[in-house]
Image (cartoon, rainbow, N blue to C red; front, side, top):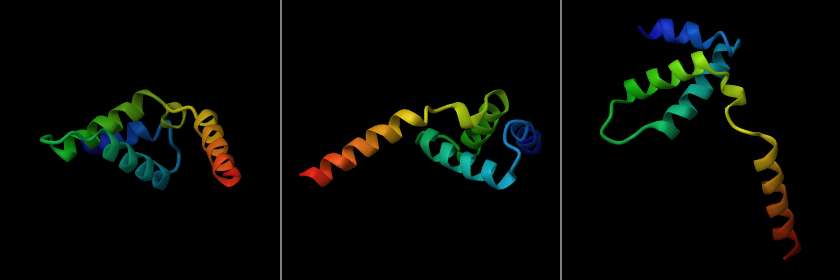
Amino acid sequence: MRSDLVFGALSHVSNRYQLCQLASKATRKLHKPNTRLQDTTNEVLDRFHTANPGTLAPIGEPAAQLAHAVERRRAA
């Protein structure tokens, strides 16, 4: 049941609003055509239950690359 998945995901994310934001972004990225959106959402919430969604992607590296790209554009 979806409520069980939501409560399981709340073990890693304490704020329900943040959980909704993270789940919607992840659902958009992981959704495959010809599959039900509900199944993709359930899969995302199940992943959030087993792993902390805040630590899934490295934060420092892409930000540094983006800052470097912005500096190159300004220099040009």
